[in-house]
Amino acid sequence: MYEQEQIKPYGEEGTKREQVEQMFDNIAHSYDTLNHTLSFGVDKIWRNNAIGYLQPFFPSPLGEGREGAVLDIATGTGDFAILAAQKLNAQKVVGIDISEGMMAIGREKVEKLGLADRITFQKEDCAKMSFADNAFDAVISAFALRNFQNLDECLQEMHRVLNENGHLSVIDLCAPVSFPMKQLFWLYKKCVMPTLGKLLSKDNTAYSYLPETMDAVPQAERMQSIIQQAGFHHVNYKRLAFGMCILYTAEK
Image (cartoon, rainbow, N blue to C red; front, side, top):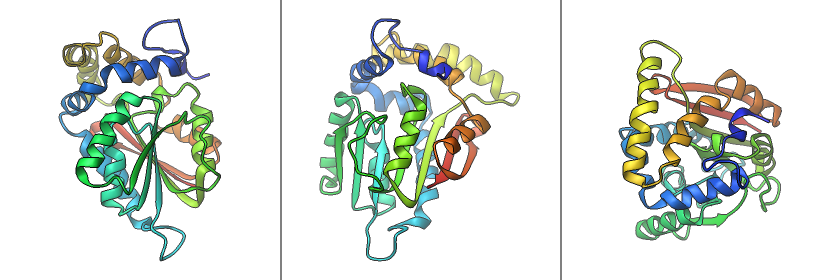
């Protein structure tokens, strides 16, 4: 068991999966505002970087004439799924999450953008998804690795549902390792992040849980090795924004 798998938002009672679902249902109404505020809007650039990695492989790695299918793991309010539909011209994007509250907001966004015929949402546990083997051309995920109750099982499931030669593109927050960003980010996550989180979300726990799991989740070379152990090949990572975010890419 990895260290972050033992950290739960609301203490000991209930599983991590149950508590993470409750937490995101609680903060769904303010999640987008918080996400963009806490990252100073840079989270949009990070998502674009992750989609940019996939663009050479679409409309599909399986050849001309196929439009491409994308699975967005822990889709939340759907920003990554929407970007995949728009930038990759993917005609089938499925966003999954355990929080109905978050996906309800995602569905509203998709309707307003006229993308409901291409983007769908469904409640799924990424550790035991209902999809067939080799169902998707790409699997994407943003800021979710630290929230999984069982990281290995989730990565193995991502591998299972990918087509042969399909691609994985995952971004997650991390702690910078170099001076002075390491020291500045320590102050930010200990003081600014919890204070703004409590103020905007009205959840006193959610944005204390975030920096705690950021410190605990495997990063860089260690996460690269974990992704390889799930069956992926050509696993690489790239630090973004002075080391505050990491993009992991891989192939099946």
